[in-house]
Length: 128
Image (tube, rainbow, N blue to C red; front, side, top):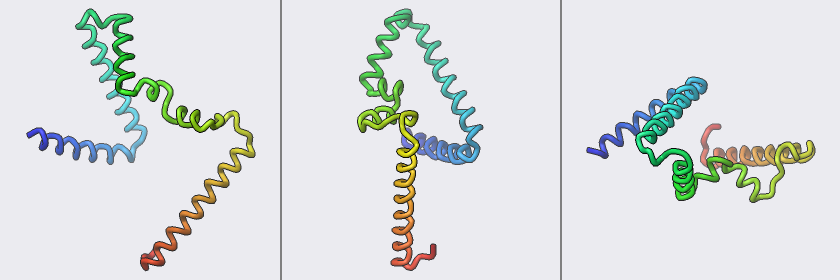
């Protein structure tokens, strides 16, 4: 029973996501409303429990986020962590020549990928 319900909602989600992906502004607005309503529900549910006010609520929230590994990634973001570990400069700190050289490297990679795709197509006799 649960498996059928799961499959139904999984397929429904795929259809909705596919349709909304063609309308990014509507997708963002609907998603934003959904997020706000979820947090409104969490907030109002927490009000039923007197212990969840003030510092206790803060401590419980931090513990939950630490235990799930979401505290740092949510508040800082993965891209900031990765760039810090790689000791990369912020975009503002980079010089114009550094940005241009990165662009050139990316263009070279794109060109190589295109060449590889052409080679694969010619080996398999697939029209481009």
